[in-house]
Amino acid sequence: MTSDIRLAFEHPSARAEAAGQPSRPPDRISLRDHVVAADIGAFQQERGRQQRLAFNIVVEVTPPAERIDDDVDKILSYDTITEAIAHELAEERLNLLETLAERIADRILHAPQALRVFVRIEKLDRGPGALGVEIVRTHGDVPPAETDADDVPHPRVVHLANGAIADAGLSALLDALEAAGAPVILCVGPHDLARPTTGHAMTQRRIDLLAVEQNAWVLAARDPRCVVVATRTELDWAMKHGQISVWAPSKIVLDAVDGPNAGPGDPTRLTAWFAGLMQATELVVVGASAPETGLATRSLAVGALP
Image (cartoon, rainbow, N blue to C red; front, side):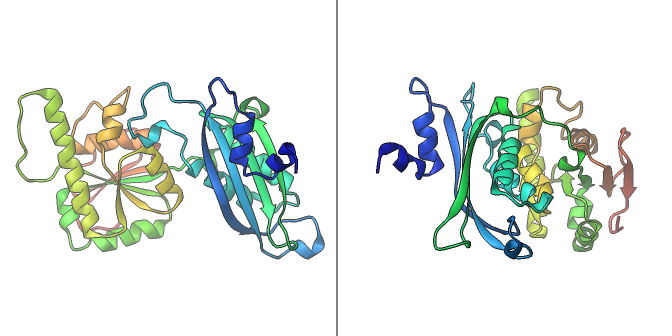
């Protein structure tokens, strides 16, 4: 078997490496042997039947201009690949793997870090072997992304005062929020315990933000549905997958170019800033007065259901 033929059947990661620039090959992320069942195919016997599809995808990405410092928000997340597959399979029934591969590649390449993508899709149930297609697309091959309002999650942001965190009705409140169907992000203020005071604005801000995050973990301990989340990438994933998040504010607050005009000492106003950042549909404050904001806002007594 010649080198070219051997390479044709290699994993897309080997194809990408062979086609890379020797002087400075790009960074790559990959998805291997991701198998999903779907109704796809042009033949009548394929309609109405689930068949397994194997996805192998490599994305060449722009090397980071600065140290990533173990920060998930500075890289292209693997979820970009898996969500592109899930989105296109859910969009409509398709006849051709070629169409599916093209749409997945286009969606991935709309990510700002993506330079080039290798997409291989194979049908595993059409015969004794795998039948498939592989395409390669670059960033310049796709038109600019159009804003799709349906792709942007708009959560309900709920601020819980400390009395609401400790209230026996917390589980019922979470039940009601889940039943409403909209993505939910919970926010809290600092705990009531004594905190160190430094007399120095920057260090005190860090300490106060940590007090908020400690309180977030207290809330997580009250109900397993509450998952503490610190990054925008994690928040976006949680909203798309029905997870109730509890916002740990330090990273987003400290990284913000146009940061909040309120700190942990004014927790409802800090939550209002966050709700605006997340394009929330509503801000609900439980156990405290709601701040003035341009969002739809409600105050609820502790124990009340939304």
